[in-house]
Length: 229
Image (cartoon, rainbow, N blue to C red; front, side, top):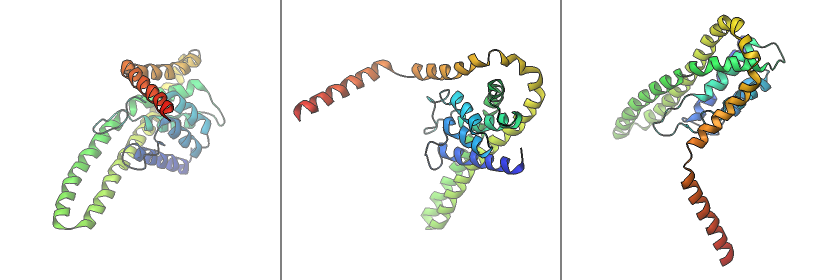
């Protein structure tokens, strides 16, 4: 893989990482989008799509809202796509290799929570400085602090991707020759396990009784409005 491809996929990691909480919020941070985007800039969109399909549901019920810092599923998708494209032959879609790279990327991307916390602590300091700048009438400094805060989140995403890509490449070079054979037989079944586990986690987080109450109330209200009109 050439340097330009690495640069482009790092850019995808930063933009998609910013979309999680700091900016945009266009949902391009979801693995089902971030994976194919990373694969597209690397010339293998189908590999990225396969990674996104496997990971999309796993953390769908854990979203970064308020002080919650869930696992960085965005960098899992981007990093696993990078690893898979770097080790797969051109135009290859070997599912056992993709799953292996995904299993390597998932624990490494845990560092994304650490970098996210560091960015938030740095931005807490910025918010106090911004408050003092407002009191002194220096509004230009406030604008600059907003950009610096955005840069903190961008740096956190970039560092997470670098850890996944660099450490993952080393682990793939060491472990893949001896372990990939263990995934060749169960790979088709594991391809189903990832979305099934994700769906089970989503169902476990749903308050079924409350959902049924709200659905019934909405249905009855719609019927009443139709009858009145």
